[in-house]
Image (tube, rainbow, N blue to C red; front, side, top):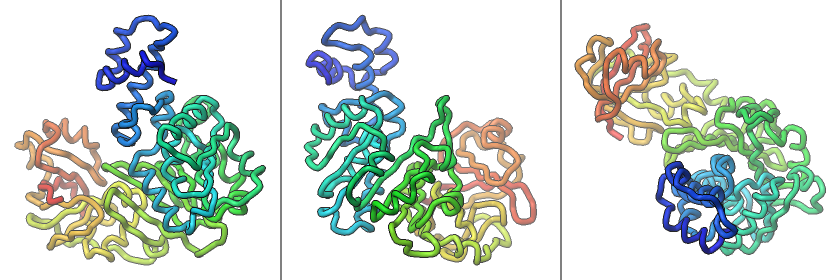
Length: 394
């Protein structure tokens, strides 16, 4: 993979700006390939954020940027592994398959402990890189298969303890797709085979997908996981089981160390509690990214005793601090109109059910971004458009 000369160069320049480095590169030689070397440096820098364990291994080889962009982070890969540990018993006697191998981060984490594991990928170069990297990590139970995941599943003579599928969410022109049937492969075309040949299957879908589409189109759903970290929804995971275990799947919103579990019927059958007034000294809560995606907005008032600011404004308040509310917490300092906040020089601005976007409001107020002040522009239940000045509690 990397020649001795290339390894030395990568180690010397792994912290450098890749674009600036590219401008200084000379033409390649037999033992030095500039494009490939830059690809490795960019890979190391990307994996420091996503998977530090991989970035620390000097023998890892990195593919093109798109494959790195699509691969999981350490947090999301470990979370998928935790689903397997909870739902798939005695993996030491079972087989695992990743039918859309990619860079192999998910496979390396999820396959641990299985008697045998198959990494299946159509791209021959990715297969070669995966073979090298798995050996670099000392993995023993893996089998790299260069081929189509669906055909591999159809032709495999055996049963899987767990299957993982991360269909490509880009069309033929490179544009991003969201709907299940627009991904490649289309899960809807072979979900019956998945259910026949595995105990559980974990399907990774676009974080932009409406989770109600999962329930309408996929069979035998046991769980739907909305996985978020650092304020961003990263992926939706749908867990299918060979035997239907429930009429209604559990929805699990996971955001770093915050977890909220519920059923859709619970949200549909409860009424939201609305705040009568918003005033200085109250606690204000902004739901985390996973909650915003899962949308149990009425249920939050029932579970935690908080009140919604308004029926269509997804911010919550309470008189006393609620420690385990799934989101960020603030103390209200002031409630007023736009004209009441032009004296503030620096603040973080968020809008919820408000006619202006955050950037538009910032420009109107002439406020710089950042600092310890948090402004929430929203609409109260009586229709008033207000700005709520707060300070962060958590």
